[in-house]
Image 1: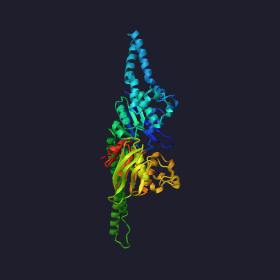
Image 2: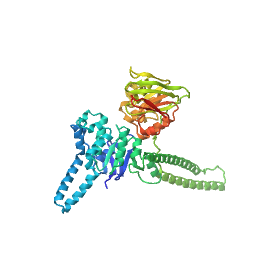
Image 3: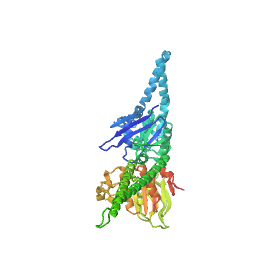
Image 4: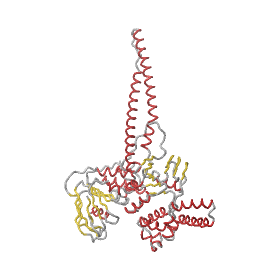
Length: 550
């Protein structure tokens, strides 16, 4: 059966290995999701499996993957789809040829074998229903207009980046490769398209290896999670006298199962490290005490009787022997502890130090029929101090427009009607990444870094770096650190989980949930929405009005 197998795989772009000794297998029918911190090598590993990169050492074995053509080389959307499905069409043509020859020579055993093999391959690829699948796949991914002749005639260059991304995903699914390798497949997909993709992957026969930051999607799709952050599991293995985790930790089940598994591993890691350090301190104290015993003096005063001097020497010699024995025993125990000693647990969690906010009962955000024609249907709401409101709704319903109005206090357009007011110190984290001149990011701060304001949020090595040179994930952390440093009473965040890795998402949500200030959040993250415990406001289309949700 086809499988994706990596054996002792290592790869580096620099002198420091990015992937080291990775060994894993994704079996036929498995759907494995790669997770880990930003920059840990998820995309690189996928590229190694796809053959885009060559490992420094180790091996990669994988069944044939879909080679989706570059949109830039396609004359039209139809040409792109035809190129992607060409292997399926060629398989059908070959089958029909063999079937025709076999009909003329039914006793040819070799032809009969070829016929059976090709029939199985054609059936597996669902080649008979290719045209129907093209239409269904395009519709399922929100590209219905591209299924019609005018859509197929379009130049791919005229499509939006999101449309091109969805079209590339459609082409990959239509090619029906023996194995699927997908990097962030839910990017640019709305809820309906994600639901379609979930069903498509659940029905996939071959191995599926993907990387995603979409927690709800992982929970819906994955049969196992492959974590490239192996530190807690390596600690448990070291403490038990075991060997080395093979570059990745496999956790069976969905994302929820993975979270529980890793939480237990981290808690055990912390307990083991604390216990081992206490044992080391106790042994160190015991050794010092042993050395003190060994210094039992033999000095004697002039005139002491001989028997007294002999007694002192006897006890000094015995103390020295005891000291030597105790120190040797301590050294053996220290050596044994060193063999299973685990590293200090890394600080996995973002520690967002939001300010304490004095409790009061007043309203902090009020809206009365706040409306922006074509962008935001009338919104009426009252948000009390300390309340946390989640704003949801489809793309284009006005979530960002509403938050910008609240952040600036000014109507977004001259045609805006109604009123919206905010009372209190505000900090804003926009949906986009930071730009020079944003609040808290003047020219000097942008160029020289945010300094100690990044404590608990940004690694110290990034405190003095130009903000624009940081990764997208670290730029998002900068925005969060700057917002916290502003000591807000009201915090407004548009798409809080954008650009963050899974660990940071979980930590941020925990920090926000425990904050006593007023929080106004807009998001489409299904995991965030499903686990939100405060009030919600769901916005409908700009022409349909909005409705509060429990």
